Length: 488
Image 1 (tube, one colour):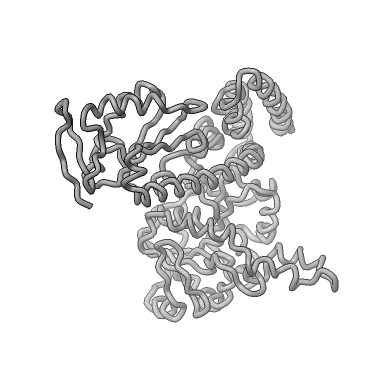
Image 2 (cartoon, helix red, strand yellow):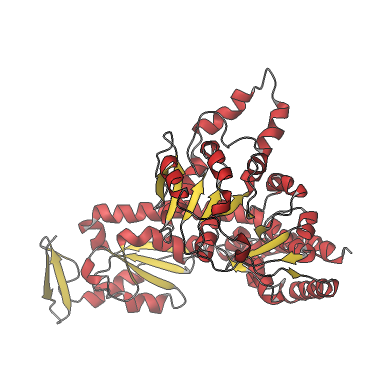
């Protein structure tokens, strides 16, 4: 595409593409001012994206009209990428994923410079499709958060109230093996069992039962799910003292919090991160991910400089069971199988349902720091997951022959015990936090994100009614929090 630069009648710059002028040939600033004045939005956005504005004469008018809005330019022309707050269009999806909260995206707008729609029609449509798709993803995330955030915060209060032992990880140069529960895990169980002294083993929650049944004892486990059903995967730990890495939002039995050595993980956002800060509680930084596999991978990359292997990371449909066996949830569900509702009928859905699997794979594809990461596969699994390299099980076996036995204890720091006196202090600080923050915008926005957005986007009359409804929800929720903290 040939670009021809020239001057307008009043001496400003413009250019032509395929003999079509991108800006007014008379007064591009006046043109930009009229364009901005014609923009009518139902509310003031947190973020505004403008698609290929060229020399961006509209910048100052946009900043005047939306002084508290973050404004970014999506570029199709390489020469303009160096201009302030510009993103090349091929990087737009990753930019959305990595730089904005769901609230910001749901409170954002995308507009196109008129000539961008004409000259870059294909690219412009691509950007709009990416944006719409991302809105749907973030909307789904907010719906989940509206439901789960309150549960996560209750879990966090219980976490700080009941945890007895904490332990952190040292930096290491030892190889790491993360074990998920995909069906392909069965092919490598014997090999892992025979060589488990050669790498640090991280067992994901859904794989704990099958590992223990096969005499594989992980060095620590990871569980990040905040839903009650996830605690069932942890039941086998009742007979073992295996450390567990969890976020404060994770759902875990109270007696496990008191018994096990806990590796505290803290996300950089959300109310739980504020509690870690307020209590000056030690933690390891974690990143949110739709699947515990993603969070575990990022964690492993933080503390080792060596290779990270993945076993049982399939993220694809398979015939029969969706997980390697024996799986805790499968054992429970099988109780209800009968001649009318058979096991085959129950497991059939997982052979064709790809919705959540596609979301998980997409998030892996957006992860950047996956160098030196390898997924163990067999002949039946050949799909690619992001930039993680596939290694066939036979090649993995050959690599194991050259790996020495390692000292696993060196990865853990000294365990810290939380005394009764410290527990009383923690409870006091939690109560203080609730008193000082329960009425703040940040607190309300995290617990009730959809309600909060609805209020901001509503008319003055509806706003009063919605605020009253939200306050009632908050009062009921606060009663639950205080019952936990007042319970001796």
